[in-house]
Length: 297
Image (tube, one colour):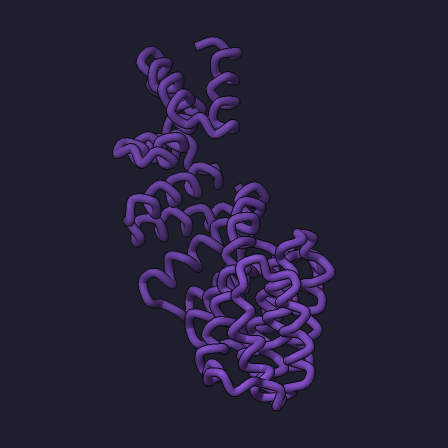
């Protein structure tokens, strides 16, 4: 394969055309079976495509380049994508033997440790990785999610606040701070976070989500007049009419409801507002994952 063809295979990979990239690399490997760069391209593309021989190709890269961090990271990723958690962890440890401060390998080890139930090790690895990074790093984002799943909202909030302070326009971080502040009863902080979301989420039809969050805060405070005011505002920007039940509830609590039919219960309204928050999070989750993947690939 010529140098130009090799660059074309790389370009195809970078553009997301993994099938063409892998095909070109494998064809060239027939004449050059020990070419590290061809093996690397074929293996990485194979991981993206779920190819069974991707591990073998990347294992050969690690055999040919045992002193290269990248070789062991790639092999670890291949094992992890194939569900071989122990083998993945061993590969990431080999990478750390070469570079003990490699953030990507520390983060990956955190995930493998968590997958095997070693929560203490998982947090330790991710904290080490987070110390070596700044802002919305993959490690810090993972810490927020991991602490939340472990039922430690205070720790999750502390990590989310670090991200928000370093990246004040990060929508996902603002959502984390708002949601976690609400969950631990820091209502003033939650309100500030939802107001911040209104400032930085520039999609016109998203304002309703932040308003729903602010209504949640007022319900927790039993601030019915303010809840009613917010519900009326939300109703004017809610294209799907989901605020109607919230408005009926707030009117009843503020003593302004009619007698035609009973208003929704507090439990029903809190569930509706929680679903709104979850929907807003989902809308921004893909953007964060894409940005994180580009940053730490």
